[in-house]
Image (tube, rainbow, N blue to C red; front, side, top):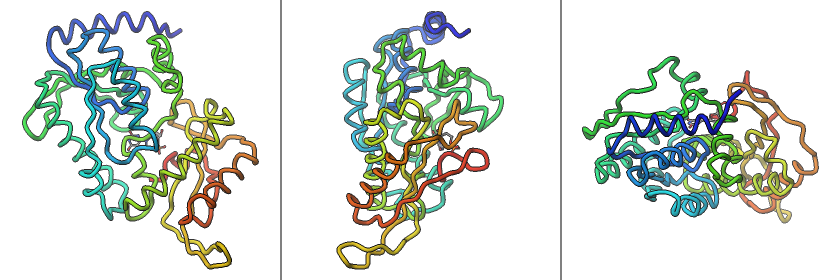
Length: 308
Ligand code: XMP
């Protein structure tokens, strides 16, 4: 049986031994994994940890403010607004893997610029078990990361053998806010992988607004805790609609709700139809560029959770 307080004490000791008096940095996304890691490492080395929160312009409505509010006081915290840099590089890009590559590369550039100012020796990462099981197989837990500008950082992954449920238990034990601990998973590349076809600032704004409506309705009905993820995807398909007696050729938005334990498999949940219909009505009435809403009914496998 997993014992969070034992894990915390042992891990703090290990981190102290490993980092000593050196400096460390972490890329804090505001998700539960990197948040828990930040607070855990802060307990071990205090302000020798700098948490860097990069706004890539692909975040959800209100997220920047929420992350800053939660961590400004708790951590040695640096906020970097790099949204224009990311969105300029992504403008018009359609291919999902190309988007991920661009986001990864710009992220490294931005992060390296900040890391240089701090002269850190260690990089803390909030990797959890499904991240490396799905992507790379058995990689070593302690490795070095050489950034393109020449900085070499020792990588530390304090929760790499844990699953999300265990990380959440640690977060509760560390007194992190419950909204953050039970926040739905959100992909690193953010809304970029939920805008199908060429990415533009306009399409991103539509997707962000639709996502805000989904979150508001699901959370105010208190259904979020039972779902792994709940979001809207802006497709590249246009559908004829009618608004104020005029033909309106707008986008198709797909609603995606899934339950899951670890994101390796996921299932379509039972949800009250009233909620789904309310979300659909709100999206088509509040976003004039959307004429049609449909519902995704596919488990993982064969689908993946995200559309890209
Ligand atoms: P898929 O879509 O592969 O997603 O079923 C599994 C889980 O991972 C998230 N996801 C990502 N997270 N970078 C991330 O950090 C990514 O490129 C990425 N793609 C998917 C997804 O939201 C789900 O929770």
